[in-house]
Image 1 (cartoon, rainbow over the protein chains, first blue to last red):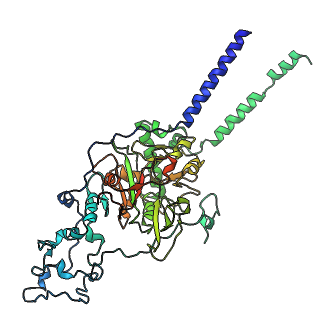
Image 2 (cartoon, each protein chain N blue to C red):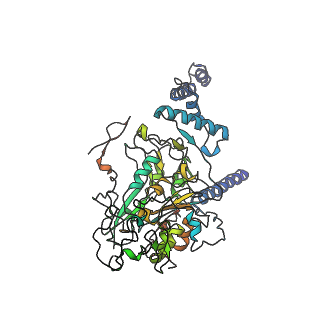
Image 3 (tube, chains in turn brown, blue):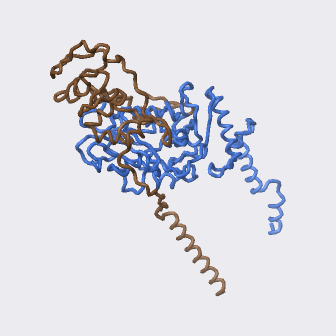
Length: 204
Length: 314
């Protein structure tokens, strides 16, 4: 009889052990093996050359070259003055880009109309216009190069297209305009079930 | 009546209780099997293995059957792939809240890309509206039904929410049939053929990111996206749970997700967290990021940040 008691006791013990080990599995804090992070450091900034090959194709300028009208015979008035809708064919007028302090000839070269002008007087091509933006918006420009600012499409691990400044912002009126939102989701209380077989049709 | 007589009577009768019950069970089982329809694919659906235990031939067979079925149903050439995860890839996602204008373009791009049901309506992305200058964002107080004339509205900001692809996902833990699991590249996926529709995962998810198909999903034939992944955007069934998979059909091929590509303000960022050159790593190392409900220990791979006035090194 004593032998039987031992056997029963042994069963109960193993039962408890199994029970608690099972509980431990069920409620153990889920510990992830940490992913090996590469030791290479993330660069703070990136050279432009690396970016240029990914730039989305530029839009063709609608009226170009500018020197077709602004030729040598047309005298340039360098005095800062109010411009009433200059180039009303081109989208947007010069109204909303620090217009208190700046005007046309701060970015457009008065001597060579087919080029843009940096603050230091250096001339750049229209295709490199982002170097003008960089002068004031250094932080945004850096973030754009690193992929924080702006939009990228294509392949996350390969060829991608970087939208550049003037593809989203109008250089003469940069802030985004408000848009109409897409319709909101239906509220559960506006949903009524009419058929279990086919579909749920919405009321309202 | 003696004891022996009683015993004899029991064993000699034509139908014993045991025989009757086994017969009943077998009969009921045969009734549920689709004998009328002799298509082999239906038998396979009943007796197949769990997705992670399928061998190559079985998987190929299942995908081919699925393609055939869907092509017939929608009158389109459908391809269903099961692209495996890439090596050394752990996906991450970030949203720049100072840019998001709450236009909901991502919501509908997602519906279209992922073949979500139009009726009953299923959205995998929910955009929440919060009032500025109030206490720190509490997901439950967000308004998903905002509908002004134009966005952004003054005094509000918007927080798009979708599956946060937790590293420690509560939804996976509660699934009684292992119909949902975490892939090596960090995606939480659902096998719609394995899901029994118990909705435990929906109760477990603290982010409300899982969505139930209350009816048979309706997708207009001309809007069906024929480029499908078995674990992602193939049409779901009535009574199963679906969730955002970061467009597994696109990202496993190296492409950006549909919501990233549609965002008109470039607020959405996606990339490989293990690649130090990716934009996502830059954001994680140089911006102040936060995650939703961090205190729950779910460890999401979905980050939020404010790019304006929050950069560390400038």
